[in-house]
Image 1 (cartoon, rainbow, N blue to C red):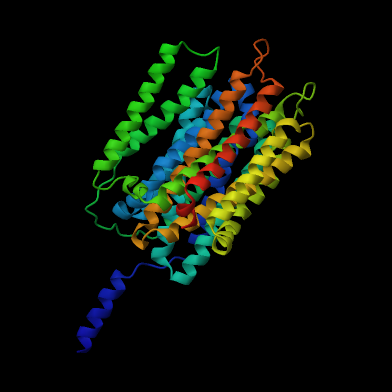
Image 2 (cartoon, rainbow, N blue to C red; image 1 turned 180 degrees about the horizontal axis):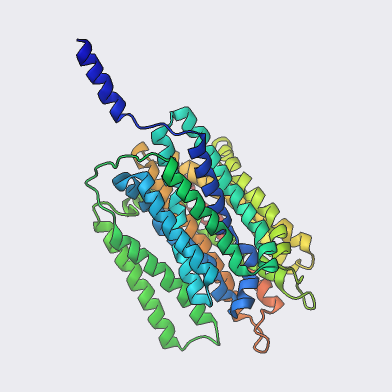
Length: 474
């Protein structure tokens, strides 16, 4: 009897996952900090990158957008890859890709090479869910919550660190180093994680990875972004060429929808969109984030315009400081959104956020002669967008069946990323279309138009809420 008990205990001991200590959790946290910094350095430095590389605002918008696009397509498959091959193994793979992208960006001599580096860096989005998988497997539920909170907080803090150090590093050394330094930290920390973190066994699954869906969605988004840049620069394109681009985007998008509807394990389960609560939330999230994406692009550009004209002549360091309050408020708004949704309902939160954003942008179209006006606009719109999209996320998570919660929230996260990327690209296209033929710099009227359009796009949410009242209330 004793032998049987001992054998049983031995089997349990073998099967039980090894616990991880504070060093392992700390390494994951520092990795998240470095990733957040690498992700955020582009926003304040975008005007500098455009000058150094000799590109237009529309082309510059691609620098941040290709990272977002990669993140949008990696998000739905990262967890599946971690389950299939083991969270630690996939995390190391992804960090190898991110490191290669960071080094490529640090050495980039031109825009195409920098864009390729950003594409590779975009897989960093998969690091957070994989970190959560590892923590959950090796710690108790209570300890996991603390560790996950630490990792998320450090990733958010890393974004603020990146926004602040991008200026001093790019101005004191060169813009190449603002990619190189976080990448060096990522490489060093990944080696520590590799050594300290125990392996987690893969989980057998009959569901495959929807690689055709990943490729087609990436192609659709990239074709659309590149199409916007091509159509709006250098006087535009002939109607036939514009039509050809539109047909290519439509064909890729249609192919993606067809693949997703037939896939056994789709990257995005489009069948969920048949539920009113789901597609209403997706439409609202898309509209809100498109408006905020325009703000994300327009404000740094206006800060950087020469003070001899209508701008402020701000360098990368100053732009980072101007944008920091908005980043802090935006991070805090995520927690507020969930509380507000529970107390007042997603519909009320979306309406308030929409009115605040629309009013701020319409006002900014005519009042943008002082730095504080732009800083305040960034704070208000970041708070409004964060609260509204988080409220929609929380409301949708409780409106669908429990088994669909992960898929539904993943779909909203992807929609959120696509909306921001599209908004930034539209903002860049408006500046390109309103550029002075002699100097190539955007006219003041282009910024006014951009702010007005951002406000009108935000106001579209009110119409969506009006016509989808029942779904949003869910």
